[in-house]
Length: 122
Image: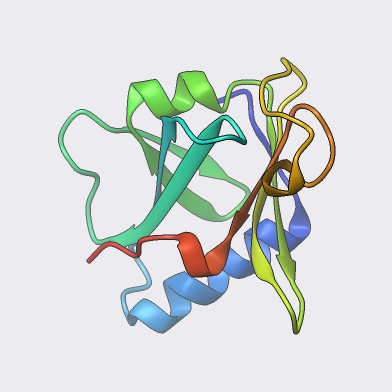
């Protein structure tokens, strides 16, 4: 997997895995193209990888992703910001994409996905 996950994003993933009550569960990411910032991301905690997903270990976190998501996030950095006014994943895409409006965080190639806009899976 050619994605960088920051310590803040790993901390969030670990917290969600702990809250699931299943220590063997994995963190599933689903990225789809679209929106002004270039992509939207959904996450869920899954006991097992859904069929067709690629499973990898990043440090001590099991991550499941469909192959298309792996392609979209290739060479990207996934970060997580937890602030009083806004919390969510930030995807920094060195390949460009995105725009320079507020949903892209004011930088081309940067998608800010507020946690309030994320769908949480089962």
